Image (cartoon, rainbow, N blue to C red; front, side):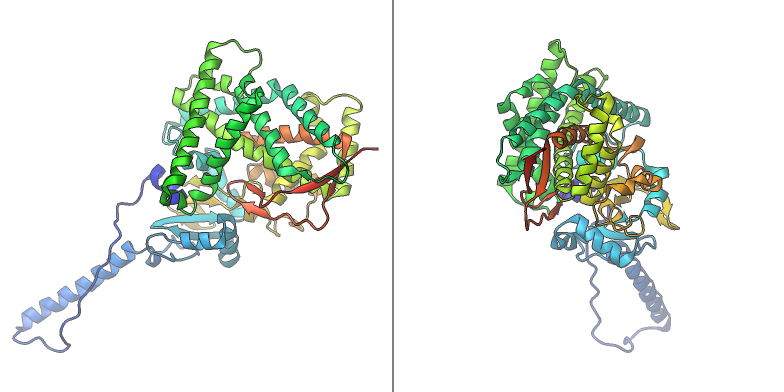
Length: 503
């Protein structure tokens, strides 16, 4: 049930073995069987031995606790039906479960969902060994499409998948360039609002950055329709309900057990899909002066279903990743005066009195380091997944074909063997070429970077450079911001800061 039925049961199919139990009723007593001939006794002994061997084989096959996970160390199932799902639910998040798993079993570990083996990779070295031969699609997108039960991206031919991926990535890049001034204007509006606050007033980061991200993503993805605040409010309402259930309801199976919740989820998803279809129709029929993400999809020779799915993925993931990158970056800057001052000096050096332009983004190298360190410290996307399309091996262990492979990024990003003082927010660590290469390997930069994250980096750079030129950021005394790990890491509760005008 839950996330696993959708992500790995429906997509790749379940095993044909049915759950069952074999019971052997003992005979009335031990000793000889009366009135048996010697030949019959031998026949019975052969039968008995054969039956016991068969029974052991059946148990090993039917019960996953008794099967070897290709020699990979890990957990036996807690329950026959659900495997280790009860363990995940009891720890509170998949990320924390993986942290505990790798602490106990090492960087390569296994666990079970029902009768399906899952292998988790929890270090740079094992990820490096697996990613190179196997990575053909974005793991985050794979996971999200599966949760939404979007199947058109799976199982098609490689050439078609490559073309579709190229259309998607090109669409994101064009949306960034075409809508740069729109996003800059939205950032200016938010900073102007903060400038009007008294210095002691607490600023709700989550609320404001989510609103900023929603406006940025919807206008860059779907255009002028979302200059209307009422459209954004409707979008946000449906978005929050869908994302909440994806992150929680599917994981613990609670959505399937609650008819009212499932109905509300399906209604919200239906409304959002209807909005995307209306936007696609409008963009086809009308001339548009500013290109948006939807236009690239419509021009990319994709089916209506593919346009719907890809625009949904970008709208959902883009908003959440952008919002939380901005939230965590601003919060970490507020708690680190030295980092804040260094970023301020870089922005002044690069821009002077001029406005930020798209061309100047590449010159803000320290801002890139701040965002890299934000992603690492916050463990922004703590889990990703890939299907083992062909039998492979990691660390001399065989990973069978169609095994689900988890990338435990939340574990890797806090690994003391890869990152010195991993719990410290320190953008200086990305001065090191080795650190930058590790980050690229994990898919957070370079050619393997998630397109939604690339969009989020641009929006966050616009926001931070606008913010840091006009305001000083301050932490709220005695506030402890705890992390909530879903598909994207968010603060458990509202995160607050205070601001003051630059002197």
